[in-house]
Length: 411
View: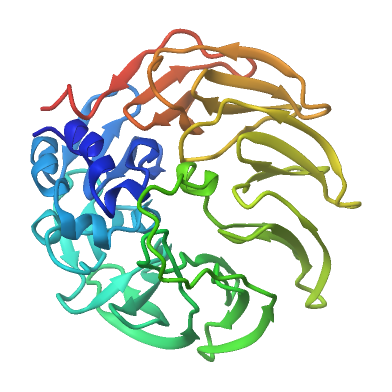
């Protein structure tokens, strides 16, 4: 059974149908040579200029067998798949294929060599499950984990070369919500480092600042957090928009100002770190995700793109878009931005939200997804393909140059 067939069959699985696998867009990390992806634990690197698959850690054809598993659908949290690259290291969090059939499987932290894809180390085979995207800083890695079946979050500092734990501090227990079928959902914290401080957005009702020298919490900003802890199972319940779009919490910083919106929340906050004071908050769609910031606006994306004025926190403009999948992001230019949707790449004016152009591109049958720019290439990652378009400084993307489809093109 192919992965494509297994994903389609997941709609008839008791736990699988609530995950919206069809709209999942794999996370990407990019450097000056390659783009790296984490597709349900199959990590691979793609050469930016040629589009060739450089390495992968497992075979795509084996994913279907492991994916078609009751225990995996019960354990999986798609937002826990992460990938990041720094120097010679690619770090990922994933459920290894050999563990996908385990009850309450843990997400492991694994390091690969950037050029060859050789596995360098893996977190210990314990009940520790890693939930945040690893943050690499020099020779150290900061990442948050919890013990499976335990809601206490722990901040870990690891050696990048070996994965050995140097120190850890507890952050407190989360109030985990439940999915529509009653399974607990752990929040996905966001880490940002500035100087000797680490900002942690818990996505669970608190923003922490950690002093890395003293290994202590400097301060915490808390706010009401609504959690659905009902144990009612709704097998035929329609999926919420935030589930279909795999909306994530996000935190953006500009000097001493921090803007954030948590996953599952219906408010966006502005905070002044210099005085530890909230400047403003305003209601927003639960499914909306922060995707960008410029001198004037804060941009949030769901099935519409909204521009919130940073000073007045009023809505400057909004435009509906055919957004149908996860990976929500926007590519910002000096006076316009681009969003990859199910109907192509939309070029939008940052001044008034007018749609300036629509580029259908090459990936015509996808649901859209994330967008990035590196070395003169506009990278579009959908639920089924990775496509790169060569662009100039101000030129629109022409016909596709490279296309990697995980099901059809294998080395």
